[in-house]
Length: 373
Ligand code: GLY
Image (tube, rainbow, N blue to C red; front, side):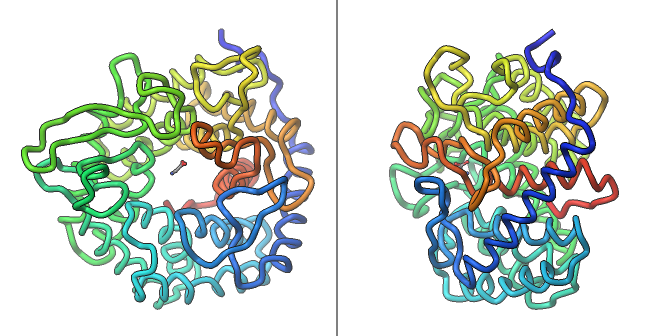
């Protein structure tokens, strides 16, 4: 029995009210954001606006597609489709695209409009993004380098657990464009993370280095967790959802096992209200902040895993987010943490936390909804 097992399940009315509140905020944000994009996190509770850059901008059109799935309202479809041109231009002009985050960026902004609305320009941009992503492959190591220039000595040979959410773009492109090598790259990357970023005690490193020439696995390090050997909560949540999605595409049972190991460890370290602190080494009484975004990602990963135990835990965590973390305006969720060690976005709304909270609400209220990861 863990803390989460004694949390109440949310009732259908509470979930419906949470969806309605989220849609009200999205409606206000459509007007407030215009053609600009919200920042990674709120600042003092409100999103600042920016151009289409960084790793998170696609979560905004991603939310618009979720709003469309929840309501079938053509206003959301039209607003979401309006972002395709910006993402196409971003790739064409090579503006801030030298990152593994092309998966987050182009799955939500372009694969989705291709699948939902048959937008050819979105399909072309998503395929081009997949081709650009594989320029970051280090063949000896069998990984996709996460950050920075391929020749940057600080970044060379490093990948990070979040990258498991970027491989779905490659699996999709492999099937769409008849390029099986993209699928092989993605599968090899996921198995390297299974073998090295997931630790024997079922916690995860945030980042891990390989020798880019010999392929030798070197060492784990953190960037956003509390310590190299602690367990960054959002990384563990990315592991739950990311390994589960990679299992969906490959059918490899060891990736499903990896997702379950991440899930069991995450659930065993939750505080009384079921919303993890930003690093799993912290608990109630630590005085540290929670990361509501880790909770929202974990809910989606647990729902993806399915089965009575994971579904029940997911619903209880979602109930806690609805009761104690829903934001009144600008963001959907309060109390996220982007990067505590660097003091960035601490105890703020986060754009990805909002997206995964709305995805969780969509999964729960629309069981027929098909995600586009
Ligand atoms: N993918 C970056 C983060 O989770 O902060």
